[in-house]
Each structure stands twice: as C-alpha cells, then as structure tokens.
Image (cartoon, rainbow, N blue to C red):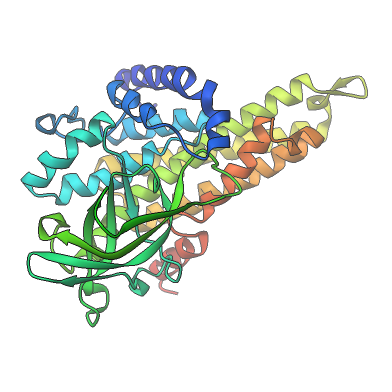
Length: 378
C-alpha cells in the first residue's frame, strides 16, 4: 500500500508542473550564473511550495505532514534541477523558527519565509569544524542587550541569497557543547559579510558561500530558543534533515535508472539496442532492484517519522545507505552511457557531478556509521 494519499499525488502534479515550467527551461543558465534568481523563490511561495508546516496565523498553510516535503524534494530530484535550495529552507531551517521562535520572532520572520520574500540559511560548518560541532570557534559575547558575534563559516547553502542566517555560535567558551547557542543574523547587519560564491564540482546553480562576522551586534531578541541549548536543538532536528537527504537520494536513484533504461533502449551497438546485451540487461536489473529496495526503506523511515518514531539511528541508516547507493548507480550509469556519459550536456553526467556531495553534507557516511556502530554497543 502506497504511503501517499490522493492529496499528495495531487500536490505531486502541482510540484512537477512548477519545476517543468519555472525551473527546467532556465536551469542551464542558472548553472552558469552560480545562483537562481530571487524571483523564483517568490514564484514558489505564490505556488504554495514553501514552508508547509507554518501555521496559518503566520501566513503558512499549516500542514503538518512531512509527506508533502518529501514529494517536493522527489519532484525536484527527478528533473535533475538541484539549484533551488527549497529543501534547505523548508525542511531544515524554518522548522527551527517554528519550533523555537518567540511569538514576536514568528510574526516577524515566518510570513516572508512562506512567501519566498525571505530566504534562509544555517551556518554551522567552519573552516576548522565540520561534523564536530563542539569544535565551533565562532563566538557571541554577551554585551547587555545584544551579542557581539565574531567568526567565519563556510559551505553555507543559500549563503548568497539568504536574508536570515541561523548562526551556530559559542556563547560560553568553557561549557563544551552546553556553551553553544543559535543566533539569527539578518541581511544588512553591520559586520556581516558574504565571501565567495564557492566553485563546486556539482550543484552549480545552488549558491554556496563563505560568510564572515566581524563585531556583528545581534540583538538579544534574535536569540533562537534558550542560550546554551543550541547543540541540543541541532541534534533534535538532524534526523529530519537526514531523512530528507535520504529521500532526495532515493528519487535521484530512480531518476538515474530511468535515464539508463531510456539510453539502453535507444542506443544501438553491433546492430541492436545495448539493453539487449546480457551484461547491460543484468546491470539494469540490479539497478532497478536496488532502487526499489531503497524506496521501501525510505517509506519505512517516513512512516516512523510521521508517527514520531524516527530515531537518530534510523535517520543515519537511510542517509548513508541511500546516498552511497545514489553514487554507485550514477557511476554505473555514466559507464553505461560510454563517451556520452562524460559529456556535461547529458543529464547522466550532471547527475554524476551533483550526486557526489550527497555522502558528505548532513554528516558524512563515516559519521553515520559511527552513530550506528555506537548503538550496536561496539
């Protein structure tokens, strides 16, 4: 029985239409530009494609059903248009605002997040601290009615476009993970600077930036949640983040299988379609089977998440397994396409470049295995 109901499939058609109409025709240009235009975000907001769980009182639809989030990410992955950072905004960052924000903060920030007027980012990774959040060196010193923020961040998705940045900073240098807090930095604050739009091997249309903070005065009103609880908040939200990365990876696997099947049926060698050769037929059988297994695993994790039962272990499993499979299948797909697979004008080549980061962001495969291994008592 499908995990999706009629309303989810209706929404899928809406999302697919949006991506085919508003994104696919322009995506190649955005890859050259290294960024998508802000107008796309406003169009997504007008189409109801952002921030589903934001309550109606703050301008959102108030739909607390993560299946809609997954459907949107799946449809984006299936057209190979990885530029728009909608998932980072809707699935990862805005939930911090809705869960931790004060009434004043919600009224100030959420309506723009829903409409696409306000784009968000989260700044965790630093040049010397990635998966190890306790190594964060960015500091926020209490100065009465505000904090003085100093530090630098890197690999920040939506970093160029972002209007609000949730910054992970150390408010107590001697308290270990209990000294970490979340501060919301707004566009235009003095001392907040954007560095390079980083030149990546893939995901070229998604702006990924270096950010720096030099004596930025952040009002106490922009503290998100309680001081010193930032590490706990981050750990609480990571399972959902890893679930959506897993969902994107599964959709990408299915997309790759479709590309390979189409190529195998239409590309001829020695007088017949290459899919007729036993090696290729067996390869495609394996790819289709593995994608189906990944889909079943994802659906199981999604059901648990909907019931409030998704554990950090479950999330680590779907994240590493699906992303590693994504990289395996797309590599096989490039080989199947031969010389065409090496040409960036072909979707399989772009999928190959875009897929590589999936085993790194959201916590590397090695971190996921460490989490799982510890749960096994080893």
